Length: 517
Image 1 (cartoon, one colour):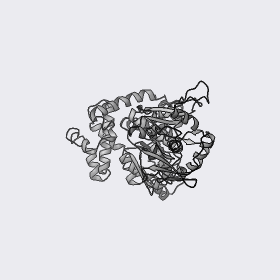
Image 2 (cartoon, helix red, strand yellow):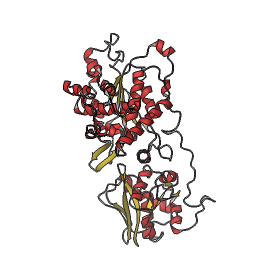
Image 3 (spheres, one colour):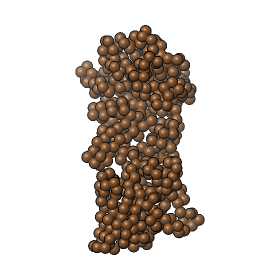
Image 4 (cartoon, helix red, strand yellow):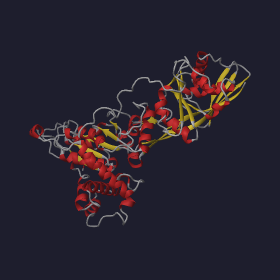
């Protein structure tokens, strides 16, 4: 009879919080009680742990067992506490040394005593390490993912019996010739966001305006809306944007990988170095796109697209609430979801790319009279009106993508490849980072006060198109700043020291779609 302790991690959003698992075994009626704000998944650990102990030839205590998850006010969810609960109970009855109090444990237990993989191992281990934990025990399959976190000794186990032998310092021969803690290969994870051929921009025929817009938004990390008839190449252009973006730096790579680990979509146990690309279906709910769900919120497509691209094809078909829910992450780069059990703050700094037909039937060419269109004028107007003004005001670049004529499609020469354009984008981003510093690595992140400061503000004559737009009501104050950021990106692509009249005029033209007026 006694008290045993060990460490686990509770995930709130993407943040891992250290949880001390205390197990107290005392005389009395045989009963297991778990306290400390557990959800149903944590409460069910009682039955899994008892069965796993029996399967591991460790007799469950025939006494009252009280398991406390501290801090008690922090919500705990999921099955990742199973291994920690079992080890703390064994420490309380003297089956493992009390030194396990300084070791982190993450893993689900099977009824046969096996230790199974759980989602969110990377952010959980990261939270433990930030709290000073230097040794963590995880499921074998999750060892490569956990070792992405520097500064920690990661030990993998395949069963509770192996974890017991590990803590006792005893040999384990379930797999002869394989020492405890060594990760056995369990098959190569197939697919993944980074696998396969990168779509080439040279595949897009014609569409000089669309290609120019994609290059500009890639250079400055801006948002994009493409309006045009079906088959004009909007989806092709959007799919080729991630190939133009530079690799993620260490911080973004760790954050993006943690999000996909938590969401259970990490295809391979390695850092994501290529910008992710998410394209949710237009029937997706707010929780699926922005994040949420019952209990503690989970990452949505917006968070899975962090440091990458979120593509909304046929965007007027999305629910109005889904589109408007994107306004906060577009401004702040995070999603804050409030629930009765707590608030989750999830990273969501992405490039939004939207594609839309000019009308429900899609036969009205953007900007044309649309004689072939079967939609009534009121229907066409209400269709695009589903994109609210506040949302459109946050989209930096808005272009019309016309249909490609058959003659052009048959005879057009290939345009520049992704490799050629990506080289210009890397150069432009390097210029912007050198100018603004590490605090604002892209033009899209620079605050308006800095843009308008005497050090960086262009001459009044250069800014005349922006001023006229504000005076006429075609540009808001937010639109003024966003157009100025786009002008800086255009200047960086051209190798200029700053935006001139031509760059500002082009940036303004990207925000004056007649079809949306």
